Image (tube, rainbow, N blue to C red):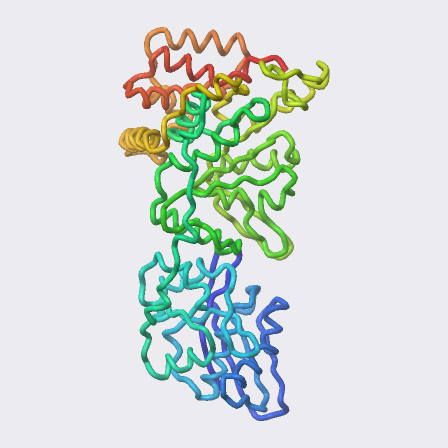
Length: 505
């Protein structure tokens, strides 16, 4: 008799249905597994035999053939164990009629079903299909609490799966829903902690309102990291669709701590010693990198100029395409990477050049060589360029605190709503995404604005990209001030946010 069960395979975020067949015939006892399998799938036969026996079922001493189709598609991962075991049990007539079920889970030798990585995107695809019930490891159930569906059945062991199917009772016990959400909810620090840096806070507000990438240049201790780390607290909450998309990525990465309940956006801060593969993604398992883990959130690159040059150059196309495509010998995968980039760096190797409270020990040649790194194609794609300085004692002790995050967030929500209504008939929804062909239509200036911008462009030899970025920034500043057209003061502020365009390297 032939038994059949269904599961899914995954390459990156792309998932495909896999049909698992088991044929049991008389002959010398053996187990043959076919279907273009990775090593962990081939080893499934060594796990399934004791798992079935330790679940109280006699394992047949016959010739057993297991096939996973389509045969042309590579099967990676250990989540096929449960589907293979159930197909075998149907062939043994222990269970019947498995066509309406999908199975995911790795079996250990005692028959327990273990947690697996990358389950979320596969289960979402299964929910779109014909399957009435989807069996998953109980340890993975927390990932799916937000779906609010009774079609997902968490199970602890193989014996439990058999009993559920044979009894027809698919009710999920109430204790499976008892999850301590407080352990995974992230508390984002508040902007009111920042003292004496109004220019930095204003720049972060502009970045959040228009989704403008930013680079912060200043000495150590000036508050660069403080400003960036508080940025997620003023961004709009994630939509349900965005949460699903992010949870797919985090599930594939095997990251457990993404906050799927509060709606807070991801904040990723990779170290400058990270390899290009860790930041961009890749490896034998084609894992997502930090750029994808920051999807719909903030990617903060501290000590920006110390990152590997190939990593920074790779970011150029990722920022424009908002996705990363990884091609390896083991396969290909595409991950979304639509993030807000906040970079930070020192003004020179020692970090004190131009600082009022520090003495730079670098010679002129070292400073020029270091600052020349800022004159690269990636920095040209960053909208806001912010200069900060270290606070003195009086500013630190007696200075004013910045506005709290709740007040700033209300401004961001208001400006985002203005952009949503303005671009209602467009494919883009944010000021930073206005295409060059529509800059003149959406970025109308007061009389005299064109002359100011023309003079600034000619005197500093700006590229067309830099000019367009100034206009987009000015449009966001005008929205914050609730101005229908860009005023001259809005344009001047936008020009001040491009200090690297005119600074001698």
